[in-house]
Image 1 (cartoon, rainbow, N blue to C red):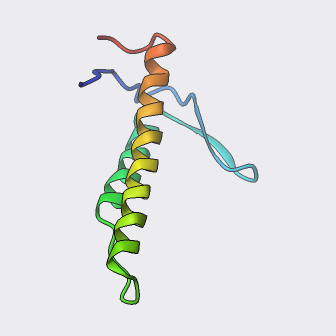
Image 2: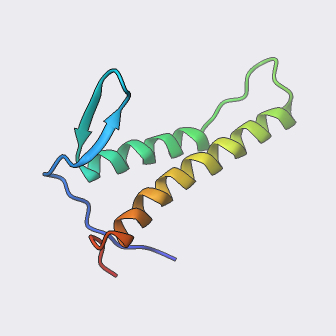
Length: 85
């Protein structure tokens, strides 16, 4: 099903980055980044020396991993009460 949610484009309240260079970003920017990772996973290219079955497994695992990250981000907004149904 579809979860509708308004993403905040103003307040930088999502912690991102790594331990050496952390930063905060908006909800919209965080989702845009996760969506970009998902789209990149869908469009993964097979290496020349890679077996087709290994490629499909790598691609499917990357799609699952990135779609889970994206879903967890949206569902965390719902449980925190900032999303509307």
